[in-house]
Amino acid sequence: MIEPSTFDVIVVGTGLPESILAASVAASGKTVLHLDAYEGYLSPWASLYFSQIGDFATAGGYLPKSSFAPEEELSFTAEETEYHTLELKDASDLYSNVKLECTDESVLGRLNRYHLDLAGPKVVFCAGPLVDALIKAQADHHVRFKAVEASYIWREDQMKAVPASRADVFRDKTLGLSDKRFLMRFFKLVSEYTESEGGVIEALAPGDLDKPFVELLRRQQLPTSIQEIILYAIALVDVDQEHTSDATNLISTKDGLQTLALYLASAVRFPDAPGAFLYPMYGHGDLPQAFCRCAAVRGAIYVLRMPITNLLVNKEDGECKGVRIASGQILHSEKVVVGPTFCVEHLTTSVSTPMTSSSSNVDAEEGPEFHTSDDSSKSFGGRVLSGDYRKVARCLCITDKSLQPGLSTVLIIFPPNSLAGRKSNVVRALQLGASSDVCPDGKYIVQFSVNCSNATEAEETLQAAKNALFSEGGSEVETMPDKPKLLWSIFYVQDISHPSRVTWQSNQEIKGLKSTVMPDGTIDYRGVMKSTEMIYHQLCPETEFFPRPITTSISDEGDGDADDTNEL
Image (tube, rainbow, N blue to C red; front, side):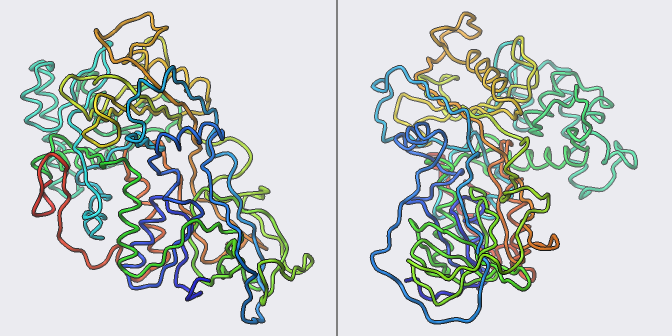
């Protein structure tokens, strides 16, 4: 029995967005109950052990949940209010096309040393909103970071360094004098824009900020090679900006300049970090745990290994009233946050309390039918369970040596159409070594991703990227001498969700119900942080996101400790 049984906010799922919300709502002084059916922070944002990734592959892309059987029949105090119940079920289409390839696990070393990011590759901007949230929440005491040591862009069948700062531009021996001049001039333009606090500067005519960013690069007469570095390795654009027929794929000049300003600020924020990006030690799965610890310190109650069976909704006005858990207990709250791994069935049943875990009063004729705003039969967490979805293909690999001798944590960007004979979106690869505590000594994890709509094409694209970087038995073309050998890999396609409304009669939304998102196809966390903060302000409209900011430090294992927010 969970006591108390009434909370200001109930959060279901321990993914990163849900964990951030639990911590931020608890920090605002409200009561929070955080529930999860998994044993240990398993979610689409998790870092899986090697055995878990094997189970994930065997199950065809499902994360195993705990089974719960109540030890005794529970009874509850009589209540007169009746609720409509919506059955919460696991979504069946989060992952697809799961393919595991391994010749011999004995060559992988100590299997218990692996931490495999299900949402990889992702990196954290040093000056980005996730680091700011960690500091404000005092969650930085619970997570350590490793700096990404270098970024590369794939050009002319080889990896070429991406400058992280003005100093890098001068030191780079692969850039010609004219390219350095062009790049430095553009960095100066970004600095002027930053200093103007987003206003119009001399190099920008009125209205330019709303025009495509690629047009500004052309007007600056930047060489194609420099444009690719700016667009895909610094601004981190996901899709082809030069050859697109869909104008919605073009980022605006304002968004491009803001990302470049963030990149340059990140490159100088922590003196011990050689670039703009960080990676959390032990994998991205440590990030939700850090926020959960902060939430618990501020009074949030945690119940893991407890499946949630139903969402309870007021019959009269469609207002969320709480959840029913597998033990049969009803937990009350008018604000419920649910992770994206659930879908909601259409039900017209109602349940009255008192009730026990073995029986309930059901009246299938009372009350209105619940439905989604697009009239689909099932919808939740941004996924309508029919039709086409945007997806991201991911591939996790284990190799026997580093792509760059002497470097462990390396980011590689494949611009659009840079892989021989393939027309593709941007492909990203992140190499991680033992210094990040995600694999044993002498082994490396390389994570790949590409946004896609077709699984077969995405698999072929990522295979081309692997062929470019690794030595495989069937590889015929050797673009890099003494390449790392591919020892193990898993490929899968992940659905990308965006919250859509779940409604009831007369197309009215269920009041108080919020849904978080799946990991997106980007390389960083700005999107999820923006959507999470929006949900927070809907839950707590009159309070600051992570109030009571505290000055503290983020420590980078192996690169030194820090005394303030500008040091690693």
